[in-house]
Length: 144
Image (cartoon, rainbow, N blue to C red; front, side, top):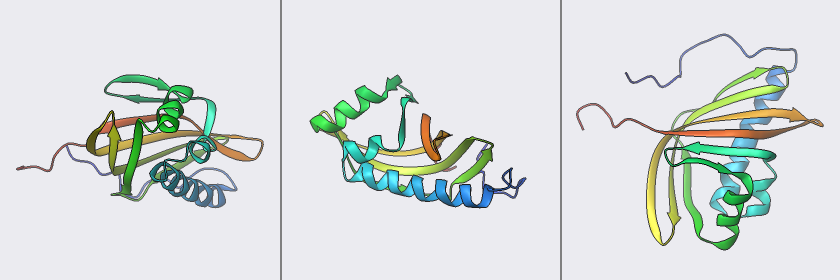
């Protein structure tokens, strides 16, 4: 079942949703740029202290992830959105989902990924910070 999520749906909620959606879309782009720059300090600015990423290998916390970046053991040379982000704002919480391709290098090996990503953001002190990222490998196109 191939669903891109790019269909019309209910508009985001709340009076500032348009502004919030624009802020979140810009944050997602800037976060991707920070990841490709392999800049742990810039990457950290988008994460809440309790941030975790969930992948096929389990749960990795913020400090562990950033330590891999700082050490140079984990780097990214490319990150591109395949679909526009689907952004839904629910008060001070937002969910952003998109299909992303990226090229990472970990432990001296290159990894090319095509993934569905879901990021959960919370608004704190007027800023959106990600508390959870979840990645799922995208299914290959039918017939491949």
